[in-house]
Length: 172
Image 1 (cartoon, rainbow, N blue to C red):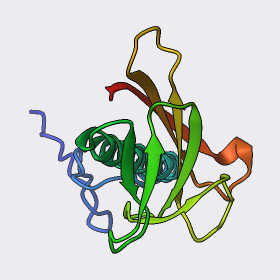
Image 2 (cartoon, rainbow, N blue to C red):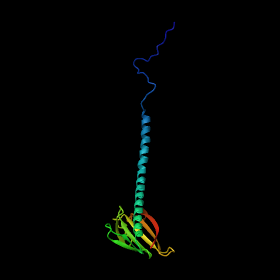
Image 3 (tube, rainbow, N blue to C red):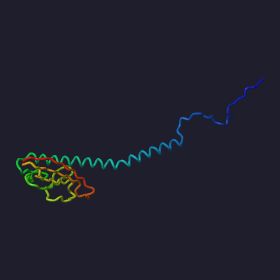
Image 4 (tube, one colour):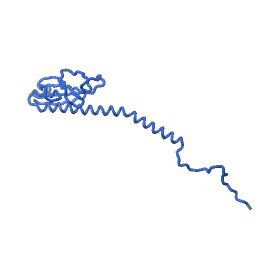
């Protein structure tokens, strides 16, 4: 008769587990590497996103300033139109739509008009300069082309400035 052999492990060896539910060190290191690569990529995109956001806000502010100037010019009657030139709204500057001219207004970041100037003075206390150009060479009587160029920031070097142009025709 044959005896059955006992294939059990000796008493001094722990039992071998075929399936382990834990992560190995290699898997943890790979996961950390992938996560750190993703975080570095996200952090690298932040400056671009911030610059894009600032440019968008500047364009929005420039549009609001131009709309304000156009609405002030449209509400007048005749060839001479007034534009507010101080924060309190007391002082006005007359712009003649019947003659070719160029006028400048300075604004703060919140769109408050500060002063009327004869030149685009790069004063660092102002965030926007509006150049209002009147051209009567439209081919029609009593109709002027009004172009407003909003520059920001005016005290920055020319390569760092942004200029937005807005044009309309105004009758007088």
